Length: 120
Image 1 (tube, rainbow, N blue to C red):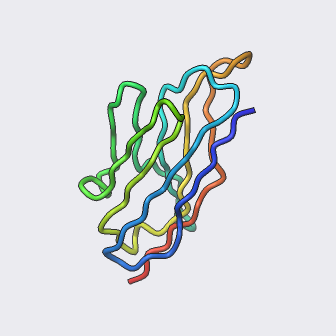
Image 2 (cartoon, helix red, strand yellow):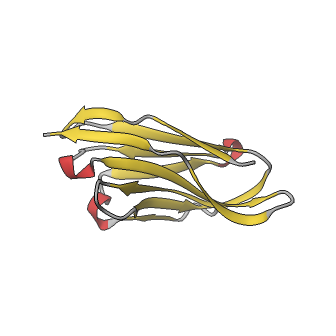
């Protein structure tokens, strides 16, 4: 069984910073990419940032220059450093992993989500 455990959400004032972390565990053979998505109330879940096994990154236009995604391959963790936060960044943030699992093959997995609230 694969688990993605997120941490680091919370309440912050506009202009502040938060750091989200996600640790993947289980019978993981290889991770192709890890990323963060977010979902605000009444809206669809959208990509925030993603990082591949080769280190390539991609960001939503709305967070470019403010958020930084990084990955610790040895520990199967991904981190999202969020700076200059805005009220519109308020959402539930979900960790996602595209990985190859022993006996199960390749699959896509989600964390339980962590709330980020930015007050104005």
